[in-house]
Image 1 (tube, one colour):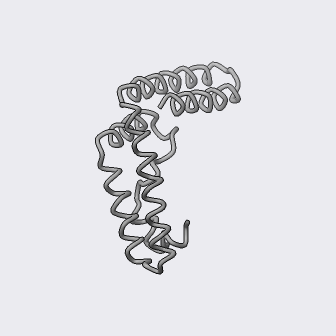
Image 2 (cartoon, helix red, strand yellow):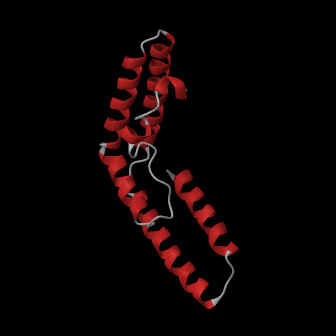
Image 3 (cartoon, one colour):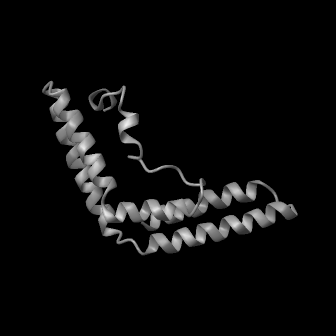
Length: 129
C-alpha cells in the first residue's frame, strides 16, 4: 500500500513540476497536491494485508485459469476469470480504494477490473495470458 501511495506521489510530483511555476500553474499544483493528500489519507485507512492476500489469490487464480486454457476448457476459464474479477471489485477494500482514487478526479488510472464485461466482450482470457 505504501508503495502505491509513494509511486502516486512521485509520478504526480514529476508531472506537476514539469509544468513550470506560473501563477495559474502554482494554484493548479496546490489544488492537485491537496487532492493527492486527501487520496493518500483515504488510502491509509485501507488494511494493506488485504492487498497481500489479493496478490496470493491472484497468482492462484492465474494458475487455475492457465490450466483450464491449456486443457481446452476455454469457456470455464473465461467464466472463472470473469467471476473472480467481479467478486474482487465488490470487496469492501477494493471499493474503498476505488472511492479514494476518485478523489484524484481523473488523475489516476481506472481500476484494473473496471468495465470487465466490456473489456472481454470480444476477447478471451485464454488469448490474453
